[in-house]
Length: 129
Image 1 (spheres, rainbow, N blue to C red):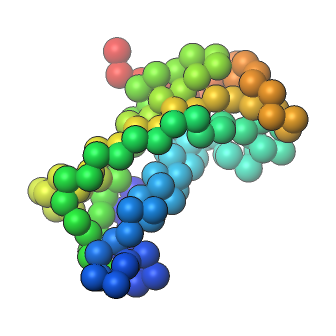
Image 2 (cartoon, helix red, strand yellow):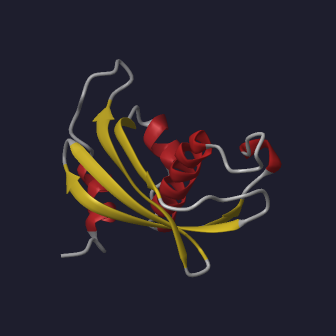
Image 3 (cartoon, rainbow, N blue to C red):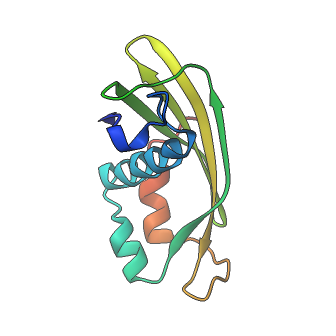
């Protein structure tokens, strides 16, 4: 997924604010799901959400307003009750950041559940071995 750093995502020094990265990771994850035929909206409509239980970002270089960043997303762990996504953010050949997010499937009451098998199978088809 590619995106451009918007002016509103920068701080007074013109650098992309660290909080913007979390939003970008979410956008990349939703697109990753969509590319595999899984609509996050449909998951939510069925009462399933992937609650974020951990975010880790290792910032390597800065991004500025109007920089184009590529976010490569990989599902690295897929279990019925836990998912981990890894992200590589680049600008051209420059490594900008490495990140990961952990997720727990939850129902509408906030109770951890097993991720529905019909969706699970779509996600793990192209996982690295």
